[in-house]
Structure formats: structure tokens, C-alpha cells
Picture 1 (spheres, rainbow, N blue to C red):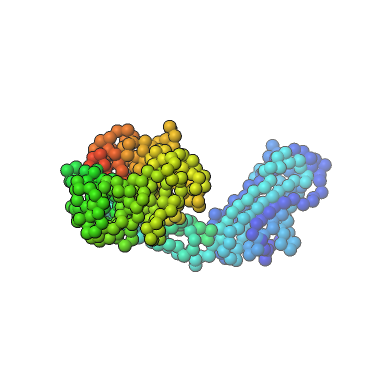
Picture 2 (cartoon, helix red, strand yellow; picture 1 turned 120 degrees about the vertical axis):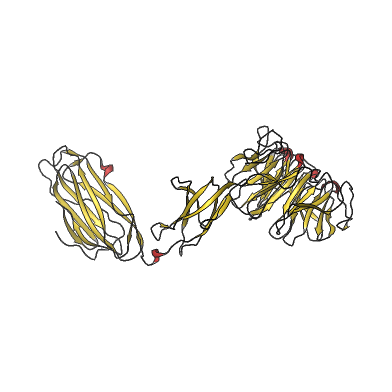
Amino acid sequence: MSRLTGLRTVAVALIACSVAPRLFAHSAHDIFLDASGPAAAAASDPFHWLVTVWNGGLGDPAYGIVLTAQLPSGVTVAGESTGPFNCQESKSTVTCSAESIPAADTVLDFTLVASRAQVTNLVADVQSLGTVDTNPDNNHVSTRVLVFDKSVCSATIVPLAPLANSARYSPVTFSWSPLPFPARYEVFAAEGGSVARSVGTSSATSLTADLSRSDVNWSVEGTSDVCPPIRSSSVRFSSLGGFPWITLNETDGGFTTPWGVAVETSGGVVVSDRGASTIRRIAGGNVTTIAGAATSEGFVDGPAATARFRNPGGIAVARNGSIVIADTGNNAVRVLDGNNVRTLASGFAAPGGVAMDGDGVVYVGDTGNNVIRRIAADGSSTVVAGISGTAGFHDGPASAASFDHPEGLAIDASGAIYVADSGNRAVRKIAGGTVTTVAGGGASSPFAKPVAIAIDDNGNLFVTDVEGHRVVRVTISGEVSTAAGTAGMPGFADGASSEALLDGPAGIAITKDGRVVIADSGNHAVRIGSLYRSPRHRAAGH
């Protein structure tokens, strides 16, 4: 047997070559091939690749068995143990032949060395020229070996949050330091002494997941095509479980019919009180009126204290802190800048919702006209989708599509506009000049009357169903489920999402820490709780 050195290949292929047949060469056998090697090996370190040939001849030897190994570039044979096989090298090919092998397993043990990091696919083939092989499908196998650079793969992952001995409400956002090469990360959590389970994967360096109330040990593992899996150390913290639904104000806290909600950068919650025709703020546990006067309707611009609204609906907060208001009863869109109210645009028909894109452009759900409009800097508006004055339910080009009393809007990071199409009991999407239906519509719709939408970082939608008395989650894959409340059951109860009851939920928005604020119109209250996994808010539409 020759010693094999300097051979070059990334795959090892074992194939047949000619040997002289014997008198009994054509007896029937099943020649079965298998191969195994390490999942990963360090460059310059020898590793074993085992090729097993099994002769199913029921006690009879098999004759004329030949294997050929073609070694990949950068891979050499440092040694071999091949039993009855005799192996010879010819250029980059190693040919191993055996006159006969017994009716048992025969193992060829190749010791290989890779000179550099690479993904190595070792492929084996075998044929018998002297024995009839009854099942040739068994004659080909493949083994994948990741050859890695030890200096690169000494990198570590450091858990950043939650820190040891901290306490967090669920959903919990995990974060960690990145590896110095592209990787996929998986977070593992052992809750209450149980076996660690995967709570999610991410290509980024953070992940949000729901956890039960318990002590948690968590770690993160990074996998790649460069190194074997790299696991961080374990960190122990306390999960306080899901943040309970609570009421920001008591039912006698002064709201008549809270409708639109939006969250300010300061953390304050701005509320349009449709029944009182005022704009109010909840901050530090206190509710104050910041524009308009209770029960005094009108259409007056100027100082906030003397400005007047008529049944305001959806609201949104601009990056500069200005508050944009769908002044439904005045058929206008108004702006509260500091202590001054001005009219941004008018000529709508009972506008129900407003939203802003990443550039600060204002879009309006022109409810009575059944269209979605965009407001220009000079106050003029143009139709983005729908046919003015025509109610219908048609997808397609935006100019030909139709809506039925569209209300709340939300805009995702790509600029797609989501519409609570209340009359059609559907959620619609406007993107690339085309309108599509995302969920609902028709008699079997899960919605009774959707009026507002918020979007999480993962693209999941949260829709308030004002007549269904619940919040509905629509995932990016189109799955629909109840996030809070009970369909068709109005009520007032704080507690976990499965226990909380709502009565006519209208506006919806998301805080910086991942909680969800709802204008619970029938309960004259503003509620806050936890609905979903993603911690940050892209857009609130009502």
C-alpha cells in the first residue's frame, strides 16, 4: 500500500475501475456504501474520513470492488488504513481496489488535512465489476465538513441584555455582541429550571420573545459557514411575565369618547376625545386638555386654548413634536404646533385617520369620499388610491381600486400604506401603485369594523375592531388571531391579554418599550398592555 501525500481536492469520490472477473464473479450481492467525518475540523489539523463498504452476500465474498478518491484542492491524505484495499495515486486521483471483500463491513480510514478554511464536500462512489450489485442506488454518499480557521473562530459572543440579576416584563428583548463575520443567531432560554428551549432566531444582534413568569437562564448561539457554532455564556435574570393590561386613567378620568391615540417622544400619550371635541395628553398619571374646550365644538384656529374642533378622529405625532389631527366633523386636517392650532388642509368628507411616512408627508383616510389622499406642503391634496365618491371593494391599480369608508392608516418602513377599510371589513395595502387585500373582506371576515392599525418591526399588523371589541393580530404570513379582548363581548377588565375586556377599541399606538396603547372608546378609558413580540414602533395609524 502506498503512502498518499500532496493530493488536491475538496470532494472525495469513490468510483469503480476494471479488475479481472472470476469464475463466480456474477453471484448476486448488495454492495452498500456509507461515509462519515467530523462536522467541523480546524485547518492544518488531521481529521478522519471513514468510508464503509458493506457486502450483503449472505456469507459469500464479493469480488472486483474498486473505489476512486479525488481529493479537493487544499486537502491532502496524511495516512490511510484500507484493509483489503490497495490504494495507488495517479495525479489527483487515488484508486483503491480489492480482489474480494468478506460479507461484512469493510472500513477505509483516510486521514485528511486541509491547508485552509473551506466548506468541504466529500463524495463517495463504489461499483463492483466482479459481482452483481442488486441495488446500485446504495453506491453514492456525501459528507460535508466545515474546515475552519482556528484564529478566526476564537471569537466570542457577549450577552448584553438582559443583564445578570435584572428583572424584565415580557416580551423581553435580548441583545448581544456580534461575531466578526456574517452569522445567524439563536437565543435559548431555560425557564424555571426547565430544559433550555429556542425562543427565536435572528440575523441581527437582538431578538424579542415572550417568556413566562420565572427565573430564566439565557444564552445565544451563532452559526455560520465560517466557524462551528459559537455559544455565549449563560446569563440569569428574572422574567416578570407579560405586562398586565392596565387603565392609564380611571373611567371617570374625564374622557367622553377617546378615539385617536399617539405616543410622543417624551413618552406622553396624546388622545383625541371625539365626544368632547378636545385633544388631551396623559403624562405622569395626569390627564390634561392641550387644545380645544370640552363640549364646545367649532372650527377655530389660533391659540390652543381657544381653538375648536368637531369630533376629532385619528391623530399622529410628527418627528418635530407637532400633532396632526383628522378633524372629522370639520372635514379638515389640523395641526397642533406647540400652543397653536392651524388648518393643514380641508375639503375632505369626514376624514377618519392620518399617518405620516418617513419624510413627514401626511396621508389621510378620507372616509366619506372613499379614498386615500396625500397632502402636499401647500395644503393641496391628491388621491393616492380609490375613486372619489364611489364605494366598492376592488383590488388592482390604485386609480381603479375602491374602498368603503377607509379610516385608520399605518405606513411601514418601505412606504407601503395599510388601510383599515371599515365598510369592507378588511385591511388593504397600497404599494407600488397597486391595492391588495391583506386580510378580511366579505361575510367571513374576521373583522366587524376595523378602524385603526399599528405595525411592528417584523411587519405584523395590529388592528382595532371597534364593533368586534377586540384587537386582531395579522402576521406577515397572513395568519389572523385575537391579540386582546374577546370577539363580540364588550366589557371592562384589566389583566392578561386573554383576560382583558374592551368596549369599542378605536385608536392604537405603540410605546418605545413595546407596550400597546388603545383608546377604549366605549369604556371612556385609555388602556395599555402587551400584545406582541416586536419592541419598537414603525407607524401608528389612528
